[in-house]
Image 1 (cartoon, rainbow, N blue to C red):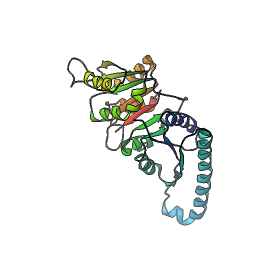
Image 2 (cartoon, rainbow, N blue to C red):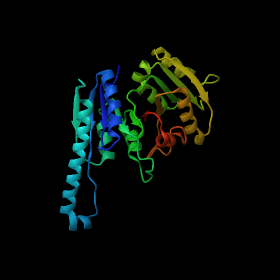
Image 3 (tube, rainbow, N blue to C red):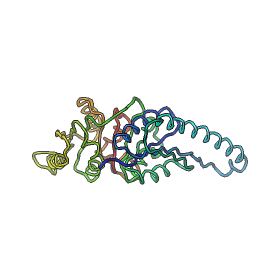
Image 4 (cartoon, rainbow, N blue to C red):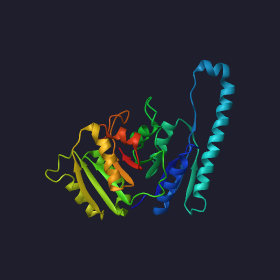
Length: 271
């Protein structure tokens, strides 16, 4: 069974093109319903400002929202023209960190762009979407193009509930991959053969899996993952995510924060 509905978030910026290219590729592969989501951001302002300048500010905000939404819709229309896909456009008003997870809960997969790597104030949007959506989230790097993924997939496995969920969520991609490289990280529950149990499970699903393992402290897992991705020429990383308020308390110790900031390929996260 593949993905039947895919949600792609658009903000009218330069990152829309890469996300749309990849989302269209995935939707075509499974003939999925493709949903374009642009949130018309509403920014709450202090009452004293609204009391004096409320009318002018509201007018400017609405004008900016109209312009940005039109650009995002233009990107969606251009990328999906003559695609033959089932399409839908959504343009709700509100706060992105609240609305995107709500819409993501009704899609098999959400495609979203990497946060600004310099953003370090509060909970970044991508972190919140991953933690609150309840569905897999495919994060696309802010640099580069990714017209297709899934030929060589790396799975970061640590035998946690979250990594198990990520494997299950990514199964449509894993089954169609040419090779899946399962990297068991600090595995302890599988004795002398780290990753053997999950590898056997994947093999029974027809996944062409090979296993490897590593032991590393939390701070070095991220760089090692990035190095292994490059060595394998992988085009997708699959990993689990856990946390309470933010992903700085990371899936594999310090790894997820490093991956989110330095990602070189799209990453499918599940929580």
